[in-house]
Image (cartoon, rainbow, N blue to C red; front, side):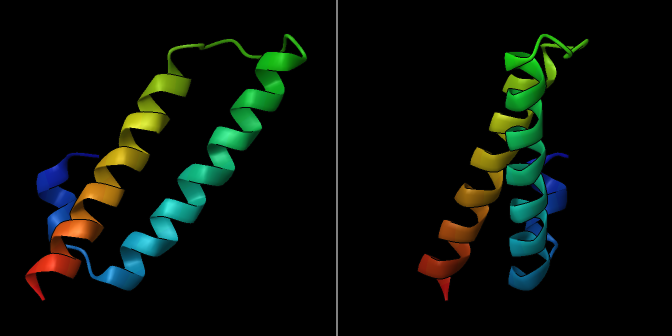
Length: 64
């Protein structure tokens, strides 16, 4: 998801997406540890999405 799209979401929606991405990251790490992960490039992509969400949340917090 792009940062431009994230800026249009509300704070509640961003928090929901953040928790979903964190859960996905946990599952990906678990799969990676047990050698069941097929697409290893998904881990950095999810980390970047988490960082984007946190950045957008912080800008909304400072701007409000």
